[in-house]
Image 1 (cartoon, helix red, strand yellow):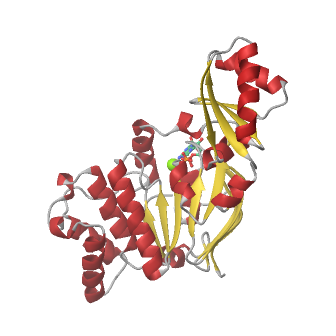
Image 2: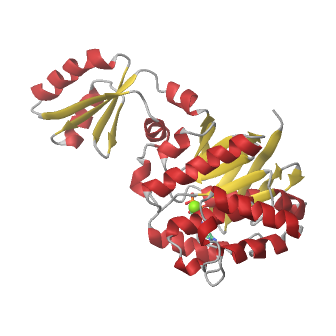
Image 3: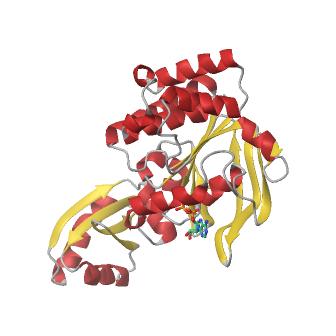
Length: 331
Ligand SMILES: Nc1ncnc2c1ncn2[C@@H]1O[C@H](COP(=O)(O)OP(=O)(O)O)[C@@H](O)[C@H]1O
Ligand SMILES: [Mg+2]
């Protein structure tokens, strides 16, 4: 497989803060690759580095065969970017927003018209193409940003939290478009997310925490590192119950719903755990058995629950102001 993205120890500091430490990544042509991590993990900074918007503090990366620091124009002409924050011109229509982008990329007019028509149909905005974007819902704007990212037929599409803040129906639609695109024209998709179920449907997942890669593999392989089953236990006095189970030598983690306990043979472990907890005066309210999910992998590797740190609206909006507004945005 030929590599479309190759990062070699790339990193970025903001003053004393190490936002991204030293990433090694290799993403192949046609892959759908997810960078998964909590808020502040370094996802947007990584996208900034790979899309030439941010200068690396160390290391290097090649995207579509060109060095991001030394050949940024070559890189930019071969990538599409969907930013975390809004980046459309509200006063222009959907079509005009695409047209503006096409002119920046010096697309031939006939090619622009054909691509724009196809993409607007793909994201189901053909009927609204001559309305100003200020009339559009959040989901419609996101779909238009996706179409714009694809307009100049990039070899790699970068998407920074493409579905954050969208309703479930729009999130599903965006995923359908992405899978269709990948199938139809083999575009490489590099996306960031903090939604575990989204990372689950990607070919490979890199988990980024505190600017460091803590894991990189297929979802199946990541889950296989946990082995066995995970038991979810809801009980009174979760803290004390956690201590009790830990004292028994069990791999136990505190999550939103209660406790997660690793067990080689989950079904056999249930009565044993319930007896143990009840002997110590805990009332067991529910026990659930699940195959390990990416969420369990995340908690095991980082010691935290990813959902405890979701970006809130203020964070997303604040970033918009800092990130610049397009491929020509500031460094
Ligand atoms: N322009 C900036 N100036 C200073 N610190 C920043 C800037 N952008 C991001 N950071 C910090 O860098 C770290 C990584 O941020 P970011 O890449 O936005 O993470 P994520 O996208 O995963 O939420 C965070 O601690 C964040 O506060
Ligand atoms: Mg971000």
